[in-house]
Amino acid sequence: MAYLVTGGTGFIGSWVVKSIINEGKKVICFELEPNIERLKNLLGEDFDKVIVIKGDILHFHKILDVIKEYKITHIAHIAAAVLRVCKANPHYAMQVNINGFTNILESCKQTGIERLVWASSASVFGGSYGNKKIPNDAPFKPTSIYAGSKLLSEKLAEHYFDNYDIDVIGLRYTFVTGHGMPNSIGGKFIQELCEKPACGQKGRVPWGEDYPDWLWGGDAGRATMLALSANTTKTRSFNIAGDPGSVVSAIDFIKNILPGSDIEALPGKMGFNNFDGSVAEKEIGYKPEWSMKKQLVAHINRARKSANLELINNIY
Image 1 (cartoon, one colour):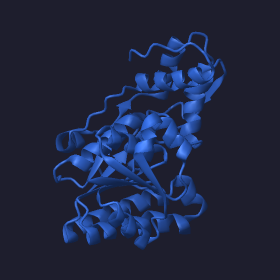
Image 2 (cartoon, helix red, strand yellow; image 1 turned 120 degrees about the vertical axis):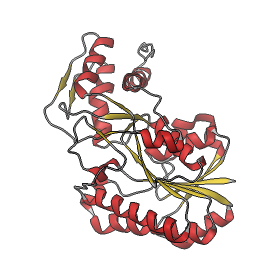
Image 3 (cartoon, one colour; image 1 turned 90 degrees about the vertical axis):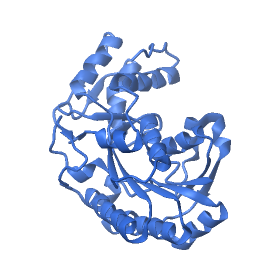
Image 4 (cartoon, helix red, strand yellow; image 1 turned 135 degrees about the vertical axis):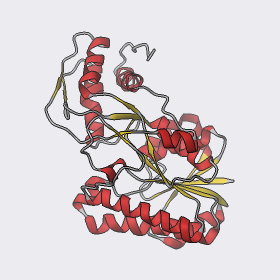
């Protein structure tokens, strides 16, 4: 039994790899541009248990070759063209998100993969719900081509399940935090909120009017592993919830544990969604374990450790 993780050295993918390794499974990463340093930093000594293969999900026969060579039984498909790539190069992004996913589905069909779990997105619901919890079957309101590609992928997955018996599950992660965040808008948000104040610098936090659903990378990885292991589910795509809390409450908490810190909430909203995760809890057994406060302290302590500063006691 072996597990293939596409995008396995990316931010979320690396946490998925970590969760699979924690279950004692063999893992092969399939990555267009492997970020070995990120995976090493997260896995530590366990990095030696992973096989990393440079490959493109647009190359169908390469995927088939890897599945056959390593006797893959389960796939976690995390690779995707993210929002900024979709904006900058929509032609390429749609090839990756639609054609690439179809290649994964078709490879499952041809090789008899036992379970495929893939990363959908909270963005399929749009960003207009505020702090209200979105039910698993809420109406779709995609507002970007990235969100549209994920919604079409959900329909593709349903088609392969209904017509070819491909046992496929989609996961809609909320706002994922954790070690290894890229230098994207989410990473810069955490930098201003946690990392700069942790080292005595001013933090100017965007989206100060927003209400994220804070999902730790380890919880996202654990949800993926649960989906890979679950019995066949009634539902095809699941909301994967975290711990909801306003940006203002996060700032107040950090000011409390870092007295004298200079943090300002800037006006505006990113458009985060908050999930009702009850369906995922019922069908795959997932509930978030990491609170918003625990996540914030983890980011603060990582920054303080790098700066040789005293760590905060994470009792949250």
